[in-house]
Length: 197
Image (spheres, rainbow, N blue to C red):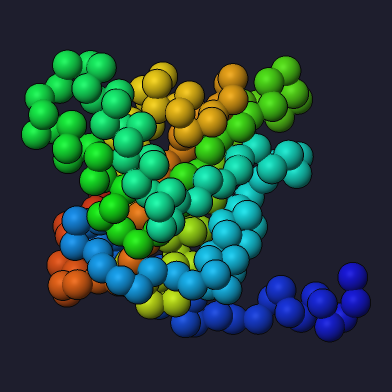
């Protein structure tokens, strides 16, 4: 590695720390337009893909829901809810779920079984991808919410979204513009969660 490259990785980034110390999620129900444009989305996905990844396995992939794709995903959710005997009101709510935000990124955990890198580490990598996406989106002025909920685990939904055998949803990350000010939430008292060995 050249001296120039080494320096690039060792420079302070106080703005990044400030972002991490202030970032917070917003509810998909309170998101509006605009969402990320194609350039912003490409950068957000690249940032997501820079998550720690022991073994360089890339044990995850993305499904992008925007435009009519959000409606098609909603139909899959509505069909699954209806098949499960949900009431009409709930079925309609599920039909509109992906329309709550301008853009939804499905982060799919795609672990490599029977590999020397433990499955748990591969799954943690997919979680880190979700966090990187949230931070990258926040850095561009968007608000995000990372959720799973029932539809991440439903066999009919997973099949309808094209998940392959062994794949799981690490999260659906809803992205848009905050319509209301985000309220701070309680944070842990650090002295209660930090110990020194």
